[in-house]
Image (cartoon, rainbow, N blue to C red; front, top):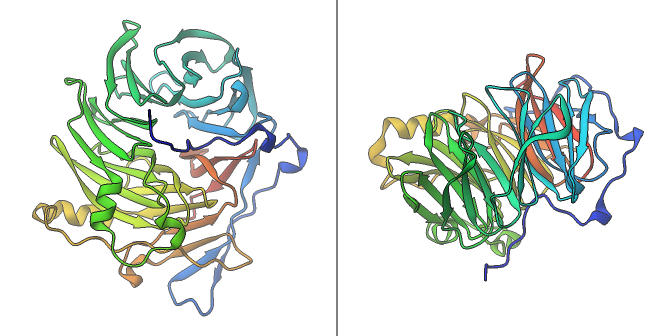
Length: 405
C-alpha cells in the first residue's frame, strides 16, 4: 500500500467558484513605491492581475501555452478550454465521464495540436475544433497527473497515481517503456531538453529520480526527507517541521542539466545532472506552506514558484549555478546554501522586488501575494511581453505582467 499523501490541485467540488462577471478586473500598470523602515534596495510594486473568465465552472487544474500565444486550461469535471492570447474564448469541450483534466500540453512543432490527460486517458485534439479527439490512448492504470513531451516529439511520458510512468511511442501508437520505481503517486515528470531519451520525475514517496530510456530502472534516486535530515540547518517554523517532503512539481531549465523540485515541506531544491547522477546545487525556502509548482522561464535560470500559502515568487538562481559550474570540485564538499527568506509585505501592495546582493543570500526577486493556493504556474510570452499565468482554486486564470522585472 502506498504511503498517505495529498495530491496538489484538488479541492472538494463544494468549493467550486461559480462563473461571475464580477471576476474580471482591469490591469493597472505597475508603479514603484519605495518602502520605509525595511532597508534600501527593497521596492514594492502594485500588480493588478488580469482575470480570464467564462471558460470554466470549476477550479482550474492545469495550463499550457503554445509558441503562437494560444493557451489551454483543464479543470475539474472534464472541462477543457482554449483561449486567445488576449483571454478571448476560442473553444470548449467536456470529456465523457467528467474526469478531471489534470495536464495539457501543446505540440511545439504543430501549435494547433494539443495533448490532454483526463482520468486514465490521453486525448490528442486540434485546438481549432475541440469537440472531437484526433486520437486517444488508455495506457495508464490509474489517474494521470502529468504529461511531458520529449524534444523530438516522438515520445510522450504520463505519470500516474500508481507511481508508474508510461512512455508512449507516438509514431507506433504503443507503450515503449513502463517505468515503475515510485512507491507512491508520481506527481510530476519532465523530459530533459536536448536529451530526448532522458527524463526526471518526483512523487509523494518523497523521491526524485533521473531516468534513461535505455534502462528500465532509474540511474539515480534521492530521498528528499533523508537529505533534509542531513542538510537542514537553523531553526524552522513549527508548521514546516510537521510537513514531510512530498514532492509535487518538477521543472527542467532549457540547458537540460539543471532542474528544480518543489515539495510539501516548503522547500525549493535545485539539482544539476552530472552524467548518471545528480547533485543538489541549492535548497531554499520562501513559502510558508508546501510548494505546489515550480517553473523555469525559457532560456534562463529564473525560477517561478507557487505555493499553498497563496504566494508566487520569482527567483534568480543564475549566479549560484554559474558559480558552482566554474568550481565543480566544490560539489562534493560544498557549504550548504543559505536559505531564502519570505519578504514582509506592505498592506497596500501585493508584490515586492528585493536586492538579493545586499543580503548576501538567496531571496526572491519578486513576491506576489496571490491569495489563493496555486494549482498551476506558467511563464509565457503574450504579445511580446513575458507574463505569469496562474490557475488556482477558482474558475479564473490570473495573468500577471513580468516585463517590468
